[in-house]
Length: 426
Ligand SMILES: Cc1ncc(COP(=O)(O)O)c(C=O)c1O
Image (cartoon, rainbow, N blue to C red; front, side):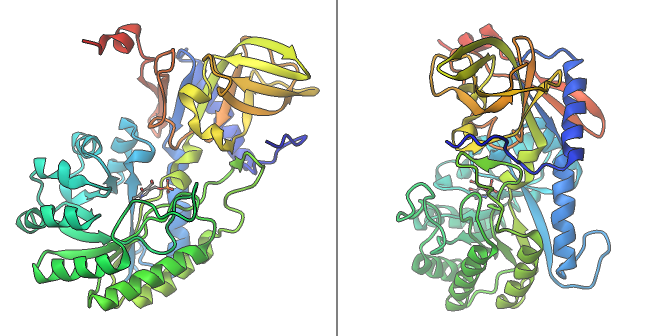
């Protein structure tokens, strides 16, 4: 890992001020540390920014009711941030949700989403989706076996059916020569679409999700062209093109110091979508399921420094939260760290550790002010995506969660008690 003298994460000053103020207010509620602080406001800002780019590219605006025949829908990627007040807030905005498991579907229903507002994705759902009898769901089928099992249900319950395609652009990021395990291969997808059409299932969607942090617009463009050829081969005119998530994260660096979104522009993304939509005569909507890009900036992890050590040229801050329990993404990402109270002065190479007995438990290794001491709080920014789903109970219980929206701040999850930590055992 590189440790340059100072890292530029590129946050606008107002973002920094927003989080400093919000963490100070949250600390005044005296939540136990570590805690996550999540806010709906950065999510609303991201959506407004993407909407503006799409409308500027010629998509139908939800507010102005322009004449463009082509619209778009955002689906909340539930797996990215399964936080109950976020689901409630998102539903109040009138938006849809994407789920990939039985628990996520039940969470969406518990938070008041109707089946018409729920899209079910993910592999092997023929093993649990038949337990539900929900009319009007949207379901993207993932394999021939799944389709065979679910097709009668799709017809009976008037599902809005779709087919997920494994395009040539989709591969396992950690092992690029290998495909992912998702969706139908192109030949299978043509067969599946024909089968659905023959069976007169309401078939309206063609779908792909490439991976997270897609580096450039051209990757999406090639995947869309491939999917268009599959639709032509199946004589299928989709009403919805569901391009999954994958817009790259902002203000976060790789462990090697690289930005993820350096080659990705929202405007050119929107323009490409408007152009590529022409490959699908009769298309009504583009569906988007962005997780990381949408919610990373909506959270912070707040930890307290418990102890300080200095050895072999590095300062080590031992905190009550860290990678092992709260921030698995720190394995491959670097995030901005701020201190409460603010600390300045000479910097020293510092490793921020969590409290578990693993050398792996390193939230960051970067130059930080030497004036940091036990009792100070650290704010690890951009912790709003894939932290709650990947949190662990390694030696300690789950962290508390503070939620913020237009109505203010409140503690929405207590720190896990010992009784809850141990009481699950029979
Ligand atoms: C089907 C699907 N849609 C959307 C997402 C969200 O992806 P991201 O967080 O990269 O935007 C995922 C993530 O795994 C996914 O599997």
